[in-house]
Image (cartoon, each protein chain N blue to C red):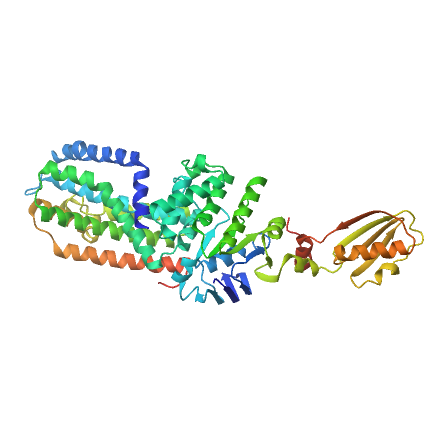
Length: 311
Length: 243
């Protein structure tokens, strides 16, 4: 059981409100994506939860433990993989992970070695396990940073931009391992400013902007909040007889635009509505030459809520 | 946490070797040479200087933990260390202790050379000298940590720590007896923690007469700077209560 509750949490650095009135409850064994641009306050939220920063207002509880009053209990539950790798450059990847396990678990030497070996092999780092981390590429170092939490398997695993600097195969691999971590019982929080990462990895996405929580729903629910965000593009063999009111009768349709034989329908739940639209037009005698549906992306959601683009 | 700081020392063995060689040259060439020029009744200057050299070396090495912590804070490694399941109290004591043990391990070979060379063979005297050196190292690490978390820019930190090291080590009676120091140093030298440690080490080893008052003063030095280090540390980091 690892429920995390932020209750009107705030953090002020001088005159700057890095986080303001932030309230959210993160459920046991869920993967929550914290989506926001750089400087949105994601890292500050994580560092407050990890007991590094003290909130200046409100509270944060982890499994019922207050991060200010019971920091030691909280630290035992959490593991954080930082955005910029926080590894001792003079140590090898193997030693970094072994030391991390030594500090965070009660495993004996053999168990530590087994876990480190498993994760390093899975991340394709085993061959370079003896290489000092300061000699590693940015991607390798980032994998070592993520590996700290993957070997630890804490109750609450926090990843800050887990796939920054990684190539595509490595990104997919890390995502898979993060999902496995959740399947084994961890609650996972992933801070990211990458739409596809938030969308593919998270069961729920919390949009953070300028230190505030803007929205928090499943990716599908968030997309549903963008009214008329999907665009259905139909090409008819002859559109001269087409009238927009043929389609605006559906409540999910927000707007219809006609450009010669091309019809643009702005709607929600396009996948569900598509057969009905095709049926309606066919009944009216139109022949449909092509159909294309552009779904709402999280980027559209972000734009709707914050008025700015992320990427 | 303490073991981590100790292990740092062994990652760079060449530093131990070169510093060790520098110590040998300082004691067996420089100190031998100037001891032929300085004659103080009742004082073997070469012996006095040898012991003082070990004590100033340990003080110097103890300051290094300050650089380590400052660098860790700059590189963000400190944030990571603070998320580990270690209480803040254990953390600060562990870091100071690690720095002190590291300094002791570093200087043990030099101390052994001096003990053997001068034929000091009283176990209690040797233990008393080591105790004062350890207290000095522990206090200086606390002082260095205080400084590392209270000075915010790298350049200012480098200057301040260098000046402090100079003041603590050089404005002391570790290498030159009080009566031969210039007047502007005479006033402050007896209060330097390096003076306290070197005086006790010398009187213990050379005369088998430990100075308990000095040891008590060194204990107070440790308590003050460990406490100050902790207080500044928590204020700077805002990382929760002193648990």
